[in-house]
Image 1 (cartoon, rainbow, N blue to C red):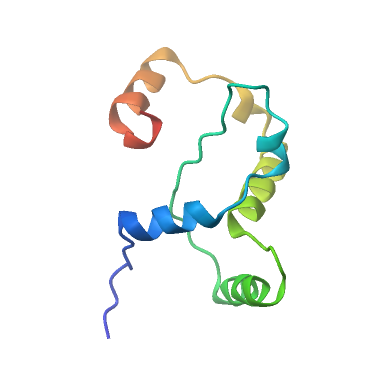
Image 2: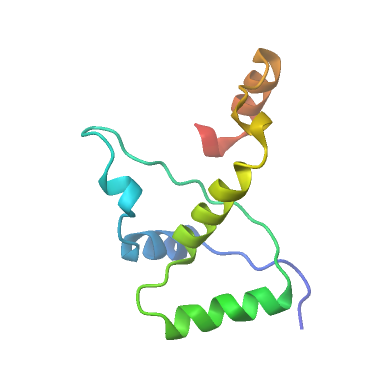
Length: 102
């Protein structure tokens, strides 16, 4: 049994993205503007993971992507500094090092 991190190829991610319907936020955006989704990795407790899987199975139309976005946006409201732009040097470093922001 491997203890390494699972990896998902581009084909798997593309297939998942193809089946995801636009959220209400995406549908209400001005014409010509598109939400750009960026995948990232995090961890949750085993109990939370099981609840997510149960919801995916039992709740029609449940999409973890939208749940994650909504939860993070709501939680970030508690951190006013999250709205402050990065200093120029930090922003430049992030843009150079993150393929997700290109």
